[in-house]
Length: 270
Ligand SMILES: O=C(O)CCC(=O)C(=O)O
Image (cartoon, rainbow, N blue to C red; front, side, top):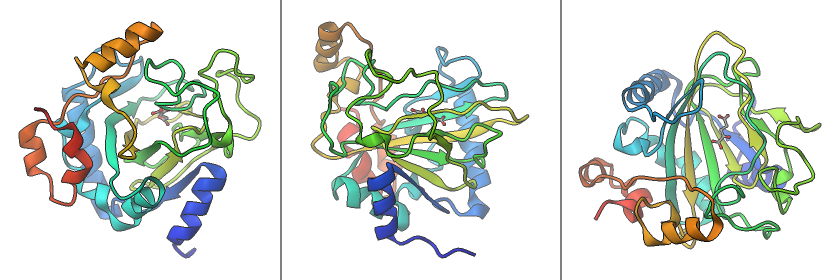
């Protein structure tokens, strides 16, 4: 069995390639229970405007907390904190169920680099790690069921295919792209600038995953807050829409473990 990569090796992989996989963030014997809990919450609270063939629930922490304790699994959170600083914050918790037949997505970078969001850092953007996207494999990710497509090294670009004028079309596979496969319980950690897309699900079962995103303390998240003046001004100024992240309910926050609470403190409802 290959040795578990060290934190230094994972950091190098993340810096050079823009992504790495952290294994066993959820232990194998516990991942089925988390998958079932997340899938059940997603089906019960499904977003009506979710794209075809995808079950989606944003603000997942309000609907299901089965995953919360794993956010501080030492070999996972050490990597996140070594990259973004000790006072890191969770910016998004989203569940995604990609059903059989779900088509390949377009290549893009995530918020705040996705140029279609009102609150985006305009391209050409600087070479700074400002946000991490972590995709939690609650089902195993394989080429067949649509493991995330990544373009290694693309995080060092100053733009991405969501931008008008980007020299690569979002729907054209990139020659060096690969699929980030892994076992259930593993987490794909990537620089949010990295070009990526959902793979096509050609299997006969659903791929259940979560996108948990992390921000450093200095990144302004106010544009994601429903009803905020800053959000309205960003949308009016750009003519673009923006993702919404509902506030964490007080009683949900109160029940989180003390080691998990600091990740969500900034977003608790007033
Ligand atoms: O579902 C996937 O594999 C990719 C998801 C994605 O592109 C995103 O959350 O930004």
